[in-house]
Amino acid sequence: MIKVLVYEDNNSLRQTLQLLIAQDDSLWLVGAHSNCNSIKINIEDGIKPDVILMDIDMPGIGGIEGVKIAKSIIPDVQVIIFTVYEDDEKLFRCLMAGANGYLLKKNSASQIVAAIKDVYGGGVPMNPEIARKVMRLFKEEKATITHNLSDREVELLAMLSQGLPYKIIAIQTGISVETVKTHLKNIYQKMHVANGTEAVGKGLRMRIIR
Amino acid sequence: MIKVLVYEDNNSLRQTLQLLIAQDDSLWLVGAHSNCNSIKINIEDGIKPDVILMDIDMPGIGGIEGVKIAKSIIPDVQVIIFTVYEDDEKLFRCLMAGANGYLLKKNSASQIVAAIKDVYGGGVPMNPEIARKVMRLFKEEKATITHNLSDREVELLAMLSQGLPYKIIAIQTGISVETVKTHLKNIYQKMHVANGTEAVGKGLRMRIIR
DNA sequence: ATTTGCATCCCCCAAATGAGGTATTTCCTG
DNA sequence: CAGGAAATACCTCATTTGGGGGATGCAAAT
Image (tube, rainbow over all chains, first blue to last red; front, top):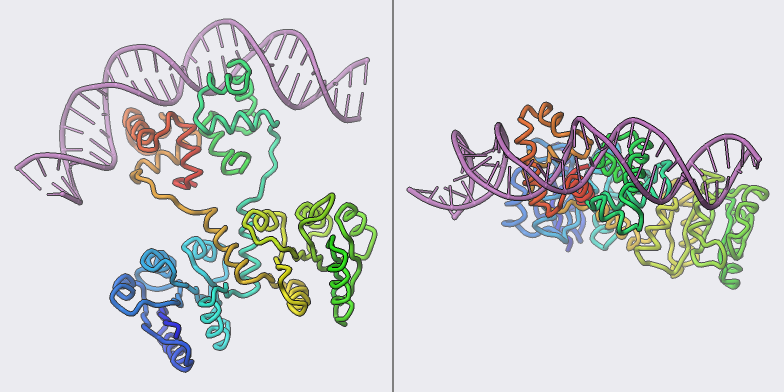
């Protein structure tokens, strides 16, 4: 039996979910709460859930925070986010928090039950449009923005980001300190930054360097 | 009809795929090649494919490079990687290149046909274990490592990464330049770094700051 | 009750940095 | 071949930075 814990603040929807889970012989509802405020106690003192169905918008501790707490107590617990939100921001934060699946409230009852079993079996239940968003977010995270720095300049910027002083950079690259300074001056100009810390900040954020 | 283009260097497997696609009335095989060396010509001069089934290991231009080329010519083309590789590195690079699905060669014939239709319909076909890997990679990319910096220190580090000199930081935060210096000294000690550029580098890489 | 961490401020001083220049060589492209 | 980027190097000088101290008030933890 898959032990399921539910967090959903809408009373009627929560009851629907309870019925839905109760109806299925392979699912065992170990709890259903309207917020995450006592999630720590729910999980630690109650029956350890295998799968958590989690709403995002709830009074007090929200679903995203709830995922983090749940995962910190039972790392193997599978969490399915169950929400109306389809925006990138929410999705992104849920994935960061460690969500294993992402269902939309427009999904049908049978899909919800299927998703619980799917995630328990190691699957990643989510709507195709959500899966596509994940892929897009993934790529965006790694999108390399074009820059006009030369290879040498990128190399020096990377060394700078390691905290190496000019002297050491000069020795490591086999050029003079003066040349290092010249390169950095050019880098700052090209990147429109005022100093090394800003260049490193911008360089890492733009993924010019890693 | 979904126009399908195949790249697969194993002759017998390629023929199997050809048969498989030919058998389905809603699929139209517009080409099948053993490498990507002439992918540009294949796509530009031949019939524009809707879906590309792409092997990774091929002589000459590999599948990953092939995805990039295909996507640059037809941004809307859907690419399904079809490979034996399950390792993170390959998977990661394929996703970066813009792959829309990721099938393993152990998948059944019917699953392959289903995946083609799925991806054409906006889905993201991949085995659950691959989907799980994607999620894990996603999280790893964003894993927040614990640090022992105070809120104030993080705040100053963030400002430093914007390239603001001590003076400005002092004004913006409403504290004296001397205090800014003290904070930064403490930050450098805690982070075990020697200077601002290294702190910013490490801070961004550790995702203490964004 | 004492310690510890945090935030705040100050002084001194050496070293590192960045901005202003100028200049040569090489290599590539129109 | 002329022009231009890239990489190299040097000079000067003001400003910024960072390390070494020392100090206070406060709140939380022990």
